[in-house]
Length: 372
Image (cartoon, rainbow, N blue to C red; front, side, top):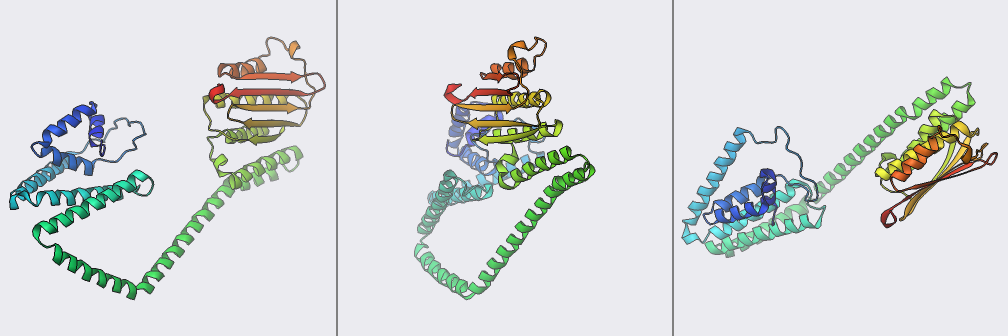
């Protein structure tokens, strides 16, 4: 409960943590439990408490050399503690244990690289420092060297301050040089990333435009797709990274425009992480756009989607020739299965409004949160 050693050991051995804790308490009476707990605390890798337990992988078991080294180390520490306990009527045991415990906590926190990322790490580091200082003070007081140590510490501090002041220009130049080098490295990495992206996207699209120079429709579609992709990459990096509804819509629109002779004017208001229900909504939206490209007989269609705390709404509209939904044959199951049926399975609704010569509007609504 203090550092996760018993819980981690129980997870590795597939035991109840209470059993492991009771075992440590029983072994602590002989002193072995304290040493074992300290060694495990120091050597056990740190894991996220909220993350699921990883599956055991081949090669995770320590080698025979590591087992032998840990055994010898544990035996040496046990012998050392036993020898120290025989000195001075055990007056030095508590200060040394405090110092060792504080150093172990400090090394542990600094070694994880997460010292400043959370309040728990900062408090643990502060506790380790306080524990080590307390143990050092008790050790000096027990040996009668507290006054001498105070005078020596003052003299050392004065010397260090004088050296720091005398070499301040050197340290300043080193810091400035380090910052300049870091800035140049970051700028170089960013330029390399931009160059790689331009090579993979813009230059390839320009080559395709040259190849289809005699087809204005294809050129316009390629230029529009590349413009949307480049704007997203420059100004909406979160959307470009994927995993959200806005990114899903953007990729879907690009696919439909690339596969069909249709230009989609899309507007996305709000955003949300993609789950199975939103993935189904995206598939239904894509099918509605494909139907508009195949049957509307117009070069453009409008897509509007809005994400609210209660629902995600999508409107796909074209101003094409339209149709009468009641006259659709039973064997034409695009809207019925791919749109309405898909949404119904995840709790959503689909409404189709159309008439001959008046275009078509498909409204898709997926409840979210408490509404779902």
